[in-house]
Image 1 (cartoon, protein in one colour):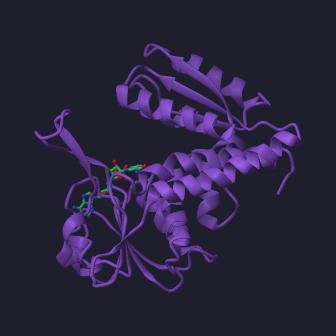
Image 2 (cartoon, helix red, strand yellow; image 1 turned 90 degrees about the horizontal axis):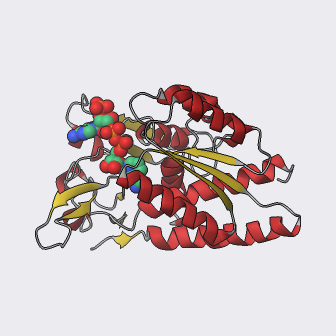
Image 3 (cartoon, protein in one colour; image 1 turned 120 degrees about the horizontal axis):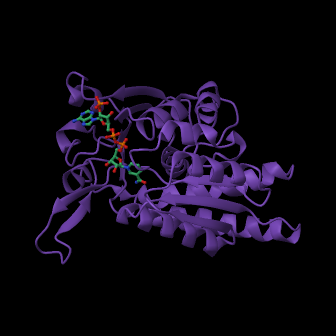
Length: 295
Ligand code: NAP
């Protein structure tokens, strides 16, 4: 039987509609959530991510303060801009698009962001709070994965989740979120990486597989238990001469074969991707509510 496709675009659109209504309610109280966006340099991929984030803000009524700086911007200038945003009451969230140019210390810049405005959830304070289960801004892609599972009716409590990939932006945080003692979590989590012996042995035990390795076909059909739920975070370019741009995007999962074994699966594109920006909007609205003492 072919798996149910988890439609990330639809789930993201539903959450954005909910946020739009919340933003309209806040506006009636005179509150306009604001996102400060900083892009250093002219990397085309970063430019298109930042434009997409700004457009998404505009669509739901969040004000965005757009700062596109030249590649030669010094660390001091960047830190001064972050500090200005930290002190600006109109700004509820600060987004520094990564990667930064090599002469800038990324960790120092992330550390300079006021944790109360850390809507990307990368500040060590946010990471630590998430780890101990305190209220914190959750990093957007892993939070998007958790929301997709919840909104697709996937039971995580008591489920065995196998996460493939241990990066700080996807693998570790999603593993951590799913083992928390709370609704939408309570899973038994196995975290795999390149030193894992016999990856398939682990993934075949999984009720839920979360693939975040960054390599096509990391998860093939023989590695998946019949009826498992498969979430594919990967975004990889593979050559495709039939496309005008010469490539197409695929995930980390052999989608065509795995969908015949899984009970639910996310496609690439159109799966986890649309959730990431949506959760950034969610965090920005959350931050505006917290700043104004609204639950
Ligand atoms: P990353 O920093 O490169 O980390 C990849 C992780 O996967 C590493 O921990 C690595 O292990 C592990 N790994 C790689 N190959 C493996 C294999 N064959 N078996 C087991 N583990 C393996 O990547 P990332 O930033 O987490 O991103 C992962 C993927 O998600 C990428 O395709 C990225 O483009 C995509 N992504 C998508 C979104 C979105 O919005 N949809 C957001 C972020 C990332 P080691 O630690 O041992 O090296």
